[in-house]
Image (cartoon, rainbow, N blue to C red; front, top):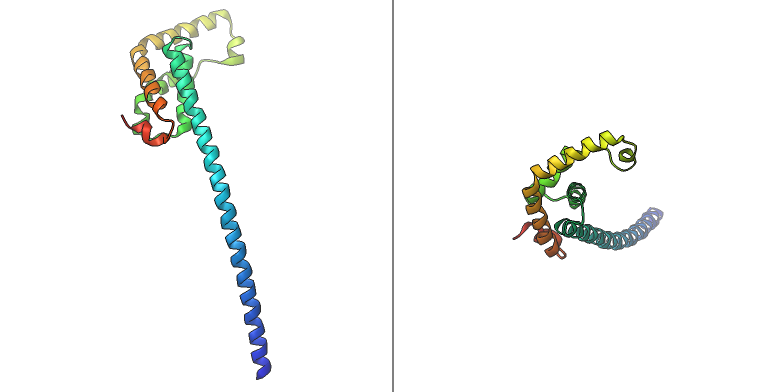
Length: 163
């Protein structure tokens, strides 16, 4: 019977050592995960700050008429999408989405360069028509964009929805 107690004690000691080993590993993994989450959080914050800076820069360029209106609307729509705003906070910028949707069929970059002169003229007229149609909405949205995103440096999500 004593051999049974020795074997049982040995098994219990082995299991206790193994449990302690697993506990130490778990603590290390939690610590490592915490560090990785902090790094991710910092990188994400830097990325958001960069997007917000770009939004403000493009909006100010549009206010000063240094950026074509249609191009600015398209760029702002893409940048605002990166922020993943909810519907309420995105509402003031809906005109950018409207312009984006109305111009999504127009070729860009290399494809634009390959178009014939007549096609370019037709698309340019179409873009001018869209710009005139939404001119007041665009101006108001650009002003709102500069105002809200200039304030949105820290903390981003609480400032965007307020004011």
